[in-house]
Image 1 (spheres, rainbow, N blue to C red):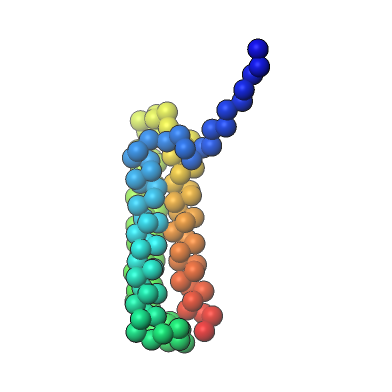
Image 2: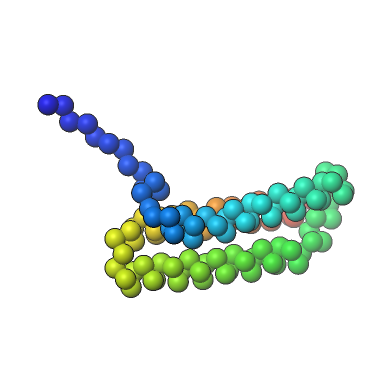
Length: 115
């Protein structure tokens, strides 16, 4: 009999609360960044020389990123304390969610310093 090896990526096998906790913040960051850059382009065109003057909004994004790290740490500690079987998958998803949020913040920072 032929043996078939199934491919099971880590990010696919997690519970719904894990996906919600992992990707809610990055989705909010992407939507806000699209709005922010879109508003800038609609108002000033592609002239990003004064884009860094919107500093309080970037500080707001950094604050939300800090809240994301705190919320996801509490979520992960709760799963560890309850000995949840999904702990490894949660850790992978939460790390990817933090990386996605960091990527959006890095993109915004690059827009600020590039011009």
